[in-house]
Length: 359
Image 1 (tube, rainbow, N blue to C red):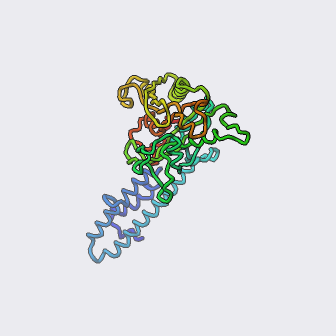
Image 2 (tube, rainbow, N blue to C red):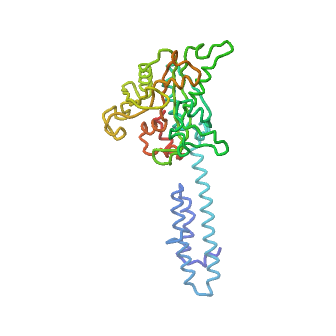
Image 3 (cartoon, helix red, strand yellow):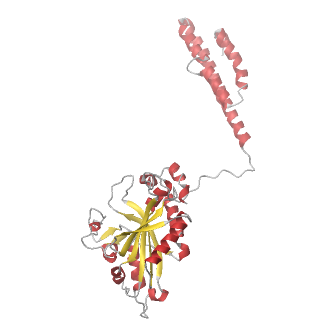
């Protein structure tokens, strides 16, 4: 490189460059130096290009070669210094005695965690888990639950039927599990004694996905989750239902949780009721979630309809029981104050990580 071809101010910058480069102690300082020397505007490189444009035609070739050589030298030196500083920074922060960083671990979805928490509330009462298929027959989904032929829920506008197998459908609730379990317990064995008689009763929970033809909006989804429960024994009445559910809600929402029951109708129970709990967010004082009432609806329940027991071959004059069901998403939205159900299914890691309160 023939420095004598460079204008004096560029030659001075070239002479000062090595010391300025060596003085860069970190990447921020190096970036400032890079801007001052090779940046597109107000830099020594930009000044050199202005001088080249103004130079006489006979000097442009030699001056241009000298300027390119200077600029390339600056670029290479800056890149080399950048590698040196990055290596020094890594060496300064790396401690070989420390445990290497671990990648983020997977975790259960908040709805799965909440379902686990909800089922655990009933564990001390002796409830176990039963499961059933998500593709069901109309007999299990409707007939065995005393749902009449003309009930709107049987229509194709509410229920997903399989086109290739019209007798099959996506279950609209987890109640078909009750039908299957009752049939299993009510069937007579080779000794003429049913499993229900041998065990003296049954109690179980049935958590899982269910499907209905709902439009997707902030409070509805064609797929959601439910937890159903059932207890069958002798002499079971409403006082057993109230005591069981009140205990479970205190275990789920806190020892100060209050409960109240309102009459309601469901085809598979008689009498039927709905259960409210004191709002777990405001402790019953009134807030946006409970609309100022201090109460939130949490589940539907009732004593098992004799027709449901008889359908399973169980003598309703000897055995009785109660059943209940609650929505997982509804509970999750209430506890977490989530305004839009769709957030639980969009897999936004920030939202899912913020749902620690559902554990």
